[in-house]
Length: 371
Image 1 (cartoon, helix red, strand yellow):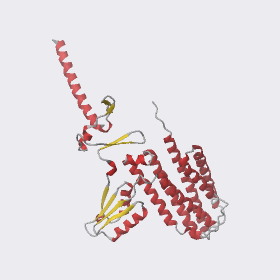
Image 2: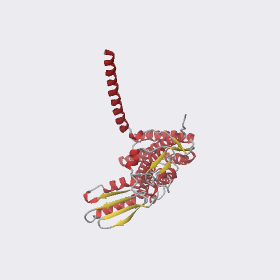
Image 3: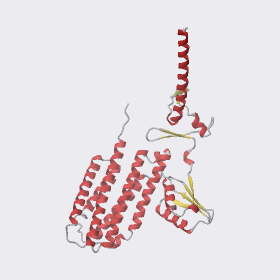
Image 4: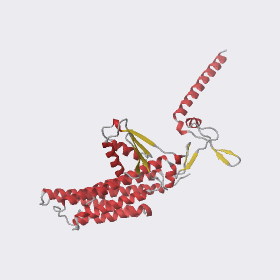
């Protein structure tokens, strides 16, 4: 009798354990619904197939006979979507009636997020200030134009295909604008006409606009594998291009600051172009040119040498700054020359950051899969 009782107790415990395990498993699957594993199956003798998750099919309102869009990523993975991707467009609506300020920030955010259409609406007539903000937005970005302009609604449309312009084109343009601006500063201090620096603000805006364009393209790469493939990149490299664009933008900020200092204080500045810190400019220009060129040739040794030289140059400029305060100069001249030295030191530092991002990209390209 006791043996029979123990037997039924054991069966009872096992039943409850099974129920608990099944219940726990169901909830575990619910928590990791995005991480399902499915086996490949063979159909027709040689074709490999894999089933789609039922919840995904339901959420996309798909049925038998519908077509899915399959794209191969540069990383080797596959992206499956229910839409035909290429024809899909995205839009965002901004109610400017409830905004006292900050429309520019929202427009830039929509632009960077990859919106193909930006609608600015208001229940009343759109204020003049909004029109001014929109004009500034169009001036500071690339590939956006007004498609509809009415009293209560304005539509801004994207007219540039993100896949038509490679990252390298924008990076090259930023590099040319920065290097030419710094070179003009050097030439003015060497005796050239001050008119070389008449368009500093315009050049700085162009640099900023290119950075925004690169970040918009990166957002498109992340969301649309077809653009990733057409640009010949992957998500890691795209993000590093965005990082490089931000580095160049900061370098451009200091190049513009240097230009304004030279333009406004050229009479009081007595620094000689063959002495530090100005002597560092030609060497910096050559090293930066070498880095940009090696975005294509991908010579790791050259990039390492350029990085070490920029670090050395930066430290030389920094050491020279300490000596500035020991001389007998007027406070106005001393302050201007120190600010110039600081800007030159900063553009060297950002050159080091540029080199490091290039090395990251090159190492990523050399990663190989192992069994």
